[in-house]
Image (cartoon, rainbow, N blue to C red; front, side):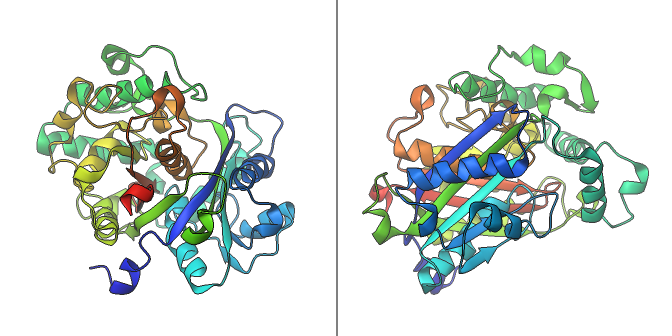
Length: 393
């Protein structure tokens, strides 16, 4: 259960600025350079300057001390720093410590930022391999040299199919819906036509997942700025309030999951909804970390948008694509929009843009409540954020 103290944080913090840069392929940049451009854009979008930033949250696969070079490069002098690394969920997980720091007066404006050159190759591949070995020190999976991370997600997919009758065609519906949204997003990396048959007939990577069931590999950077809600009202852009957020982790390795069909999103989602005082029926737009097509199905179930085992049927007939009953991953997601290593920050930024009414052709009408969900590791860490406009307070 959520404490009264956490409930009191509902709506007290707002996202005042967001920034994106280089999502796709940007040769010639370093991770830091991409991050810096997105950070400056987010700060400017909030109507602030770097001198106003006194809190920093950031994480990187390649550096356990990543906040320090970020602070140095951006020329900051923060009184609040969080470098917690939970994989792709990190930047949504950063919300709660940032909110607590703002509420306590430890700081006044927190920059959350990320950048990666995963596609263009300035990221050293040997360093990535070494980092993965460091992140996965247990001897239970790596000695078998699986094609990670896709093999882990394929295992969860196979179990879901065996237990609930989920089909490859239903998985393909997820990829096709994401592509439909990407075609409305000029910044999406993959915007070409994609059919169910295209997904099913694509090259198999780890059965039952084909290459079209797998996320993109892109470059990219994202950033957002958090301030107290009273201050956000004085800034240029429409405030997006954090109504509820929670993080949960039940395992690191896929082989240690208590149940391959249930993720810790069941816990993070329930706690976030409790804090927000809302339910899934109140959410108009859903931004989920779709590293693989099974993710979307699992998270729809675990977050309460449908019953366990019904995710496959839920996404049929374009239900989560443009014109469907529940808009999911309206920027194209990690499957067609962008995926520079860790995607969670981009899900949150898309939720903000939808709530501000700034999403262009892909804009969903009358959005007052949006959910952004991050996933880290191999269905390991899960972080959920429920965001809303002033009308949702």
